[in-house]
Amino acid sequence: MQTDSVARALAVVAESRAWREKLAAERAERLQKMQAAPRPFYVLKSKKQLELRLQ
Image (cartoon, rainbow, N blue to C red; front, side, top):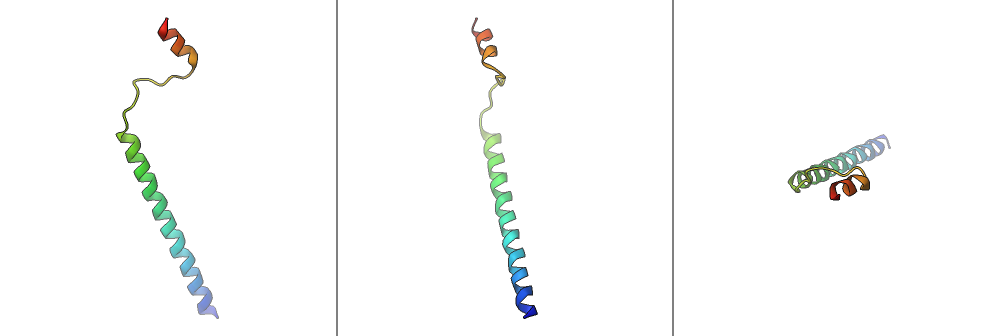
């Protein structure tokens, strides 16, 4: 009975480790895509900035 609970605990640990690795891989992929994307020269904080630039 005790070995069954140990085996179950090991399975949970392996499952959470796999989930964490998958999450890290997705995060790294997202970061790589963000770095590859073209960036604007500036970021508008409000619509007012845009209106001032157009005048």
